[in-house]
Image (spheres, one colour):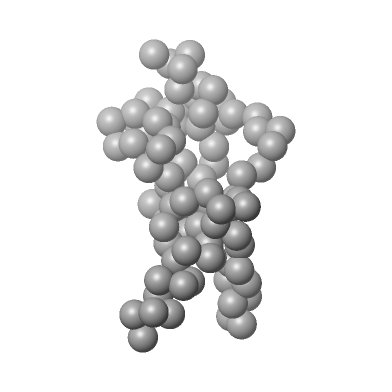
Length: 83
């Protein structure tokens, strides 16, 4: 079990604001175990929308708002239509 988790922990796994639901090390039961393991090396970064937790890619393009924050296009359009 620890060998699987050791592939995934990142420094972001331990802050609620930056946890990702798809990450096994971010889940509550495994988070305490993952804290004692070394961090994973990630050679390819992945951008994730902080509101929707969806990946930012060609289907959900990143958009920079005037406040300097980056959000996914899908969230930005959905929030704009709510106004």
